[in-house]
Amino acid sequence: MTYSRLIGASVLAVGLAFGFSAMAADTSGMATPTGSKISPAIWHQMDAVQKTDLMKAQRKLKQDGVYRGPIDGKGGPKTIMAIQKFQKSNGLKPTGWLDKPTWDKLGIHPTMATAAGTTK
Image (cartoon, rainbow, N blue to C red; front, side, top):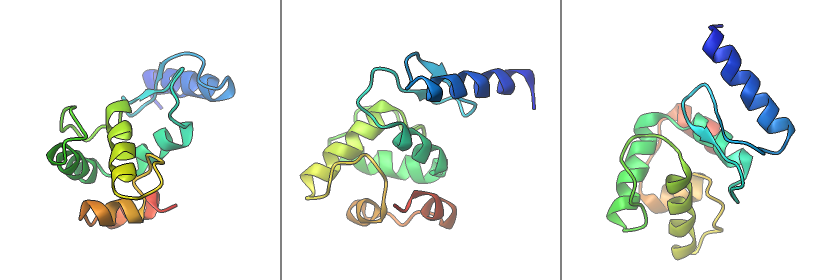
């Protein structure tokens, strides 16, 4: 494990232990939440989504007018909030999870790796 990954993992562990009381970057480069109403479990779930699948979801969310961020395959707060908006406007529980009902409503079939890591 490289020094920067070790530090990143340590910062993330401290953040988990203290309820994300401070912003910390995890090893994937995605910021973990602090003071956010987004569940830490959702941030973990975003790590399980393949970048290409997340880009497809971002593209569809942008087409639907609920996402205004970049199509970068990173599951940050704008992506999660857009997923929640999309879910709510489509009669789904607004969890922010890219679960099977959400993928279905988006009309996207995720890769097997993503599907295995995002079903709830």
